[in-house]
Length: 248
Image 1 (tube, rainbow, N blue to C red):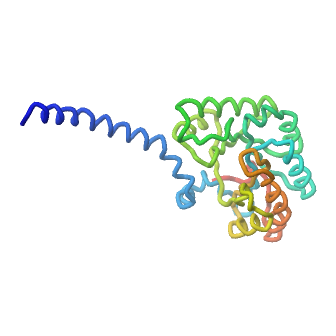
Image 2: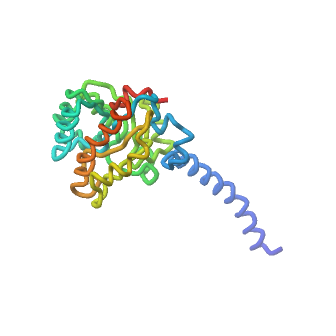
Image 3: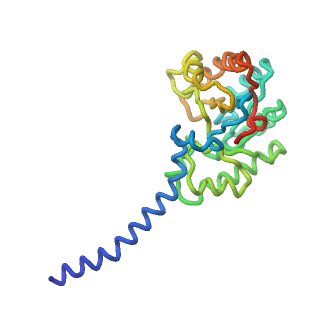
């Protein structure tokens, strides 16, 4: 055996455990993101937002947005329905008066992070700090301590999962979404996407802003809203915010 071979073998023995350790840390960091997959969420009803069998939770992401959120508030008021709004810190920071209006209308305010960034590709520590900053802002603006956290893109990491728990926030995703963020979405397509999942215990995901979507995409959710609420009520189901949902 040459000295070169001996050196290479020795180096491999030193490097392999380090690489294995890094791989383990990466897996630990990214592991919670598996809850984005519907099959995994079905095994974790609490994360999915499964609630009481006679209730459906109505939730909106990415606001508050002065171009669109007031229209949702008007429609929800007309329908006599309340919802949970997962707000981005950067949007609430720009439009605090609108955030106060949402709360004053009887809706629940929850945390969606500060920016709409993917936790798996963000430098360590940033998401935890921004989650805490967003939670503090919700409390400062609305006077109510938030209870729920939904990560952007529905992607949890070990960091955000721990940070949420330390702040007393419960992570919750959804059981059905309307695919209302694309340019091709329409009220009909949103209703069609959500109808199979309209059952007791469901948590519905829609968007009251196009801040991270195609311009004007929010109109598809707004147009679908009356039919979704009516479908739930026609089935004898209550529909409202997560605080009334009895999440598992």
